[in-house]
Image 1: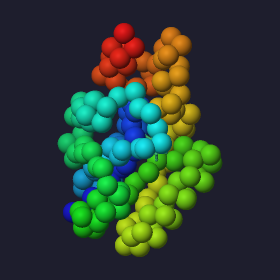
Image 2: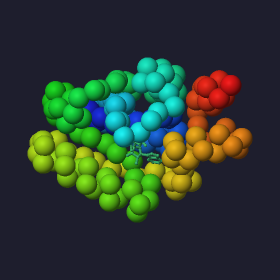
Image 3: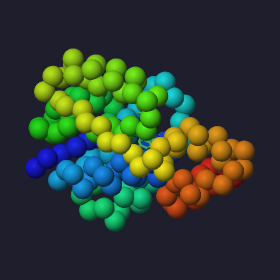
Image 4: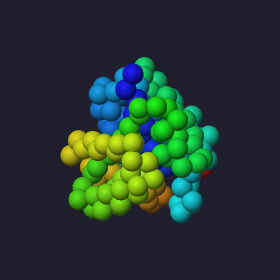
Length: 158
Ligand code: ADP
């Protein structure tokens, strides 16, 4: 069984993330969305809130599981045996950071491969940060996030 792990902050999940999840889940037998604790970002949603939101949004896709990981990503991936890391690429601007991260992970665990999937160009400008910014100033984000995320954001904003 070929397993892929898609790590990220997902604060919150966007339609861009969902696009990568759909693509990866059709290529691999199982896709694990791994919410990782990012110490450099202040988040809008707790880890548990993000997990619950992703679970609702991916419910129609049967081979997707959502987990929270708190250690090194490669240690988690190694524990699954034969799994790979999947990341999404939006634009050239993602490349440098993703390249650096993939090479660091390879140095830590040479047996773990990282694979990149290109998002649909229609969603390539989306980021969680951008969504939060537009929402904060009252812009309509309904076309950029799954319906349950849209509701959760409205509730959070009050
Ligand atoms: P991180 O903080 O680890 O970058 P993110 O939740 O911001 O976590 O992103 C997780 C992954 O999803 C990254 O590989 C990122 O490039 C990718 N991603 C984010 N937004 C999009 C999008 N609109 N299209 C495709 N991939 C995306």
